[in-house]
Image 1 (cartoon, rainbow, N blue to C red):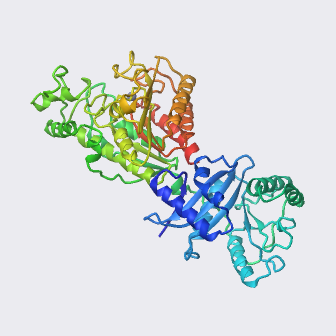
Image 2 (cartoon, rainbow, N blue to C red; image 1 turned 90 degrees about the vertical axis):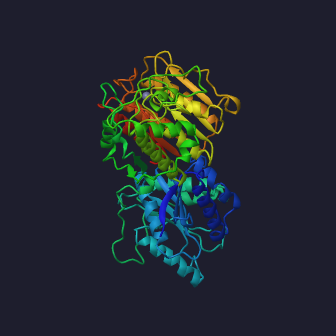
Image 3 (cartoon, rainbow, N blue to C red; image 1 turned 45 degrees about the vertical axis):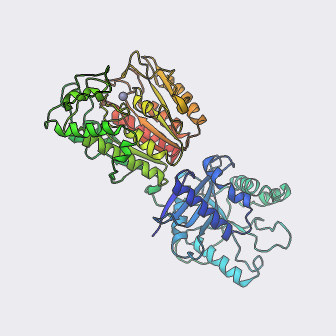
Length: 579
Ligand SMILES: [Zn+2]
């Protein structure tokens, strides 16, 4: 069994392993390739346009991360074509359906990128060009394979002119129009061929050779060779459904609704999840996956174990249907927590409006499971995962709950990811992400950045100032962008760009977005006026970091636009990261 997936970078361990195996296959199967062409692979993935083509790598691997084959594709976004550089199964594994599955995926990608088609080189099956019958037979088998998809060599050109006179097996240029039956005009073909020869083979092709080959394309439109091997109609259709490796992994807290505070004015309610789910269903962008349970040592790695034990225990003791509001705050004698469980609530809480109830801990723990399951998918190499959860978490500090939050899901997930690289948490909820700031304040391996309403006007009122920059080794790794009461989309984008510039400097490997939609116009807890299109732009701007990204849902309380805004944000992010 194998799965086909796109590798966007070599950050997650499973991707690093895959890229190394691809390089090993290249070395063993393509002995003529220069070492620098092989070693540039990770850089080409991380900076897709560095080599003037956008590099796309697909691997076929099994559940143990064993790579069984790969395809390396170059996308030219301006000229709108794709060039298939390599497609190969690992040695001894050829002919097991891997090549076919990879080629189908490559076609699907080229089609979804709205290109004119796919170009690649194949060794010739003409006795004059390939005199050795054994070699010719192997070449013919490859051409036969591609012919079943309607891909055939372009004829009546000088493309197959050997670079050195007398050289044998000069390749054909093969074209697959992806079933789009649109003629390829001569001028377009010339531009494409020039781009391929100059950018791919510039070091070995002299300008005179490029000029000669480009000038030899004279048929208008260009012509493909007649089918030679396959009698029946080729399978040219490209699958229309979105491949799973392009979708956003979605984890939904399936136990969120047991936590329902029914007091009037408590805006953090179960309908929020329903609204968002309803809005994102039908986009076809999401792959909902089952939530896995994680041990509470992940929680205790971030929150004070005494606080976690207390929260769990006190919730168990609250009468079903009742809420316990903290009412005593022993701030002067912090070494002596009150003995009585209900009285002690204030010892661990930052406000008076976040009640404890029978199910608060269970629901919050499940939200953590969702965030961790999503983070695990990012480590599995997925470019983007979304934890649709409530209760939210970003106000929960190392040993305090508050602001509708009990356990800080995004911080717990970030801490988990930090074992595999540097993590940046970007909090774009309307309210300051005081939880992550507190938890990672003295650490440099998890960078925390928050854009929010300034403390003089917005909850939590006591933190989120611009001069809070971290302490000790964490100094310089926390940044706050407090903003005034009135902020529109344009103002927000400018600040977001600034925050992203700062984030880039710390060179993170993973991004966690603590995403609140309470920056929207009409939110009952905010004062700003972002609209759906602004959310989409925010998503796109963040996507340009090109990092494996985990989005954790935080606030957002205006049910009339909550779903639409979340959808726009995630779609904007997806377009850049996976589109
Ligand atoms: Zn908020």
